[in-house]
Length: 307
Image 1 (cartoon, rainbow, N blue to C red):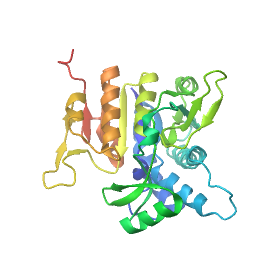
Image 2 (cartoon, rainbow, N blue to C red):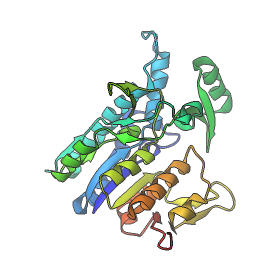
Image 3 (cartoon, rainbow, N blue to C red):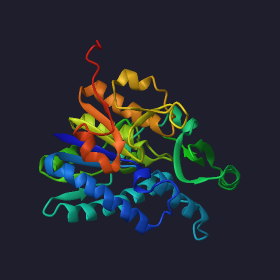
Image 4 (cartoon, rainbow, N blue to C red):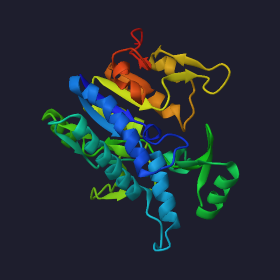
């Protein structure tokens, strides 16, 4: 079975953890252990989020007195692809001796007129109190939004139109290579209508929507979205919170999940299942093997009565 795995940035750097390299390495060691078991039985492609990591790099860039201007988000996204991709590749080499593994910096085409540029929703960086977040917003010109545990920076998150390296990823995968790609949703770029020249844009693409597009284009059988919660919950964070063991795309969309957290994950898996009639699931990183084998997480299956 061909599986596209989307690792959440918060699964690699948990909420409230210090963003030290050693902390991320320890979390990636856990990820590699979980994914190695899948890779022994299935053909897998790994994508990953970068919200906490790109926020850290952006803050460092904003504060660096040696820079005349901070680095743009597209280049910071490329940096996070390299960093996280290298950590994953090195750890997976150890967990899967003899397996060919490559981390590929990937670019994702977006529309320059995407309305998301006028409505930032993608959380990046660490969680702040409201006063501290508002102070950063005034100092750096940030947009901020309320997350589940505090306040964070929000940036534009345009929809992925096309992953430019999909053919290369397919060729590598067909040759038996485990591919790590589309980190942080891919480096966001627009293309000139006349020349095709690529230009980076100030945005962070949602990695789950990119993963769904990648899974569709690669004709994957399964889309696995791994995060820091064990499953999808209805009424999350309220006294009426209830785990969802299984769902169809239509049922999942009725949950009205928040844009900045579970919303894009729910939309990504619903979109993949609708377009391909494959299976998808959302669940905890440590339970990756159990989720694929139906013993954990939330399974999204086709609606057999649709159409």
